[in-house]
Amino acid sequence: MSPAEEYGAPLADMRRLVAHWKDGYDWRKHEARLNEQLPQFTRDIDVEGFGSLNIHYIHKRSEVANAIPLLFVHGCNKIIPLLIQASPDHPSFHVVVPSLPGYGFSTAPTKKGFSLSQYAETCHKLMLALGYNEYVTQGGDWGYLITRRIARWHTNFPLGAPPKKGSGPILPLAPHISYTEKDKAVQRGYFAIQSTRPQTLGYGLTDSPVGLLGWIYEKLVAWTDAYPWTDDEVLTWISIYWFSRAGPTAASRIYYEVTQEDSNLLYSTEPTTIPLGFSHFPKELVIPPKKWIREPNLVFEVDHDSGGHFAAYEKPDLLVGDLRKMFGKGSRAFGVVPNKNGYA
Image 1 (tube, rainbow, N blue to C red):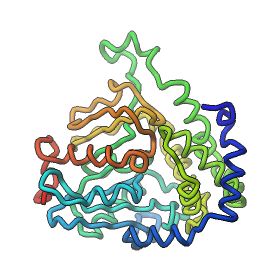
Image 2: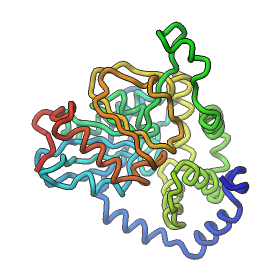
Image 3: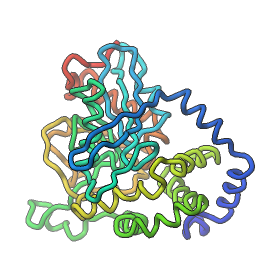
C-alpha cells in the first residue's frame, strides 16, 4: 500500500476518475452492453411482513436441459457465460443472479427489521417463482450469509466463530488465535459506520457522486489482489449505485439491520447437513483459521494463490472451476439436485 492509499482513495486517482466521468465516460454505451449481454427481468416478490418488493434479476439458462439451477449472490456479468457452458466434461448451470433488495435496480424495503431471513426469503421465493424447486447456491460477502440459510451451498467468503473456552485441545492456543489486526480494522472502519449510522453516511453518498465514487473506489482497489481496474470499469460500478432505484444509501441498510439482529452474526455458524464448499482466496477481507470453519458436511475446499474479495469479477475462471468440481462427477455433491447433474 502506497502512502497515498493509507489515507483512503488517493487524490490523484479521484481527480482522474472525476475528469473522465465528466468528459469521457459513456454510461449509455456500457448500459447498452450490459443489456445486450445479460437477460434481465423484474418480478414482484411478497416478503412476509414487508409486502411486495420488485426484484431485479439476471436469468441465463444453459442449453443443457438438465443443467443445475444455481442461485448466485455476489455475482457479476463476467462469470455467467462460463457457468452456462455446455460440456460432457463438466456440469453446466442455469444461473439466477438477483439484485438484493435495496441494491441496483431492485426496490428497497420501507419498514425496519428487514434482515437476513428476509433477504433469504426473497431469493428463495424468486427461485421458486422461476420453477426451481431445488437448486444450489454460491455466495460471497452478504451472499455467504444469505445463501447459508437456503440451499446446497458453496462460498468464497467462509467465516466462523473462534473456539469456545474449554473446547478441546485448541484451548491453550485460543487467546492467541484471532483475525488479524488488518481484518479487524477493515471491519471496524466502513462496517462500523454502515452498521450503526447508515443514514448519516447516506446524505453524503446521495448528495455527491464524487463522495460515492471515493467511498466505493477505495474498496474496489483495496479488496482485490492487484486487479488492473480500468477507469470505465470503476465508473460503471459506481454508476449502477448512483442510478439505483432506491438510491445509493439503501444498500447500506443491510449492515444495520443484520447487526441489530445479531452483532456476532458474521462470526457465528449455523449448523446444517447440506453439502458445503469453500474457496479460499488470499486477499479476502477476513481469513479465519480453518479450524474455526470446519463442518462435517464440508465436501469441497480449495486454496487459491491469488484473488481477493470480488472473486467472481477478479478470478471468474477459478471460481467457476471450483463450482464445476464441487458439483461434478466424483464429488460428494454430484447429483445433489435430482435429475439435474448438468452434463451435456
